[in-house]
Image 1 (cartoon, rainbow, N blue to C red):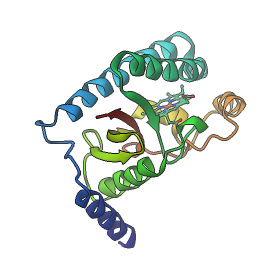
Image 2 (cartoon, helix red, strand yellow; image 1 turned 120 degrees about the vertical axis):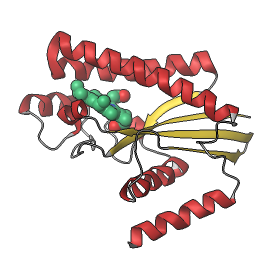
Image 3 (spheres, rainbow, N blue to C red; image 1 turned 30 degrees about the vertical axis):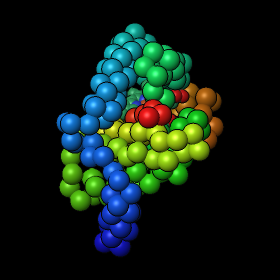
Length: 190
Ligand code: HEC
């Protein structure tokens, strides 16, 4: 209960600083971000599935490692948005959230605990930076059945070995179906 109250207070603070509702269809930046997120998610999921079918989950780890950052970089280049993924318990240390992302991720967990559907969960805000105003957008990523293989509590010894070898600081385990695994995080100078 205490956590929920802290969560609500944090949200109120964010709302007071001029939040743009991610659900509001009228906001063109949020709509643009959602389209990019959709492409990122679809491309990644396609490659993950292909890799799993071709060589099983151990093979798919290498694909995740190489392709996920490459897709993010390609999308960033093409769209002019900064496109990335983040998590409170990242596998890749490059995905450690910044202060703003961390606050939104904590809020996503609180929103889920309060019963909200994770699939459409998103948050957007215009923030001040030294370079001017930046539009920031985050979209929650739910843990699906297939994700449990590599992010659950009961990984095969073979997978543990393959993950530990590449990600000695891995924290992205112990997730259950429906948990917020992390989020897509996008930003663009206004
Ligand atoms: C075959 C194993 C495997 C499966 C299955 C898998 N992942 Fe991952 N996941 C990884 C690896 C490896 C990384 C690190 C990628 C990198 O270095 O960018 C990762 C990273 C992530 C990240 C970025 C944040 C972080 O922890 O670094 C998210 C978010 C994520 N996975 C979500 C999912 C979701 C959602 C699913 C199910 C749809 C899923 N993963 C399925 C292996 C897997």
